[in-house]
Image (cartoon, rainbow, N blue to C red; front, side, top):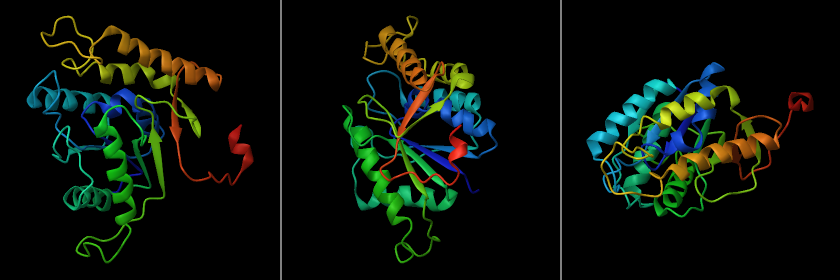
Length: 233
């Protein structure tokens, strides 16, 4: 199965918490999108691996993505090594995405920063025909970085107003992770009511910058070519 876009997250809720609105928008526009979770979240303060797998399955149905895989890389220990690069290269060559979404390379959580480096390096190596020649090479056209904790100056903002409700519904599938007074677990930063409020505030802020209600910010390293200036209108 070839996909238009492949979204990589270090953990099973990363895509939902950051760029799920854009994922849903792409799907509604007729594009094919998949999600790759690098780890199973076994080191998380709250929730078991089994709980988080079930939550991810529920969220996948809400989002409507074509596929979702977990690469089983150790949680809290994402290393940029040959073994993990091969895992990422394999799914890139399997799905042949035109664009890849990945976390911003600077973040408070080491897994996010390491995931960014791992995916970006693997995306380049996936285009080398002599590396793992048993799998046909694939060169992804663009890497698009999404915002986790640390902010950046966006290259562009996507209007996700129409899909914000679906994004929040997907986030709420992760009942062991987010604010849930009915869940008996050790409190964390993500499980606080303030964290959910911060998602709303951030989406409203970036939406306001483009004159919309909700927006999601993204960054690309390269200059963006515009073939038709009128498409900006």
